[in-house]
Image 1 (cartoon, rainbow over the protein chains, first blue to last red):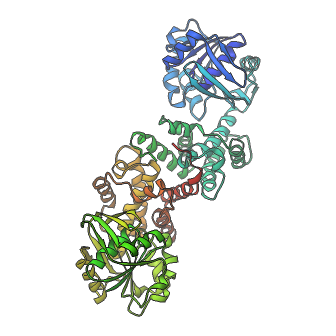
Image 2: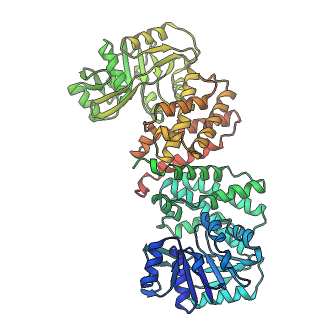
Length: 311
Length: 311
């Protein structure tokens, strides 16, 4: 299959490497020039769970360098870059090109659908974990289920083909007929972990301990679940709060991705996580004061990165 | 005048020293043994705005060591220690002993009134600034108006006597006939500065800059003002938000006291500041979601001091 990966950060690079190794024609696109140059000069270095090796793969900072139309474009940019990245794809999207988003947060399928039409877009979630170790180097840190599906839940030929390609590359993938429910469920989990972890500056396991932190987590998750229910989204678990707590315990030593962003003083995905609950809540008339407040606090923290007192 | 100072931290020590120098019989009480020992052995060292010198003054860790009944007890403990400290005072409170609170936050007059009766209690605010430099050493860092008054606003002999004693000690003091309004106004200012400064970890001046931080400040202050109005409190300024902003600008390089507490991983006065707005709001049926959320976040941060990731 001809596959372009847009956003060759940790996850995009790992997926691209695994897909290339199993014989697909893969092209990575990323704005990080040193990373792209290292991959083109020496190959992509993958180490960790799937073994240590170089993978030969093409990369570029420019979408225009890609020849021909790919069968599949996998979007792995941070959510706040989706729109910009998607707009640049116009020249390489052919009649048979599908767009797959495996990104965190809410709003990515909507952005892609708005630009290229709903029928172009498929979506999913993945539990793989990866970390960039330096230009051209990625650590395969975690392996877990990946699920993809058509937005309308249909079992199409293309979704089966793409799932097969992923499975053949060592990315264990299921077809899910309620992929929006899956994305929302992952969203609810991030709503209950990420921003709260940032404000207390703790690992996932700490969030569910004590008196006050679990109380705030409950409030954030309950608002998100109410919005999802009002929208008719079928979540993966009847008791999502319990699921969030269970995931905090399972990943107790993880520093969540938003906290990693704040530690590095990078832009966070707050607008696509708690901020998305606020926006969706407004549309269906569900009040979300806790998510609103925490969204604005994270935005305020981002705004003050350069003025922070070192503690 | 015979004066006991309960809570000889920075402000208590400075007030005690100034009152002793002008000829009052002052006794300091504090649980910090090294500080008490240093004061008893060498005197209290004051430096800064009022000059550098040792002041001879008695101190103790035990209320029981005080002989006789003082005319005035000034309470300067952190608000979360008021109740415990007040209960220990019973043996030394005589018929003519007045209790003066100059503490930050809401609830101190209520605690003292509940234990000893309203008529014993007078209250006020002070703009003096002080910092402990080590055991027995205090920096006189800031000078500004002090105001005291009877809770019912009456101009009594005792309030005039106490104001005179303070004025004679170089503590410029006015009698105010709306001392609850004064305390509430200072509370509203702390509501708009302290916890928000903590969450962004910035100095006062930064809070009023940018897009998101001023928005949160406005929400916090507006809730507090609504609660005050519903309670019939007369605040010092018609536009309190404007006053909060003006104070942030005037004190732009200050690290607020709650942020200082969080930096040192000490208990904060959150329950007597934003938490007090939540409690008072409940009693008068004014919703305070922003103050509620920020109160719980600060409590959660306190709860996680020992688990924080170092950034």
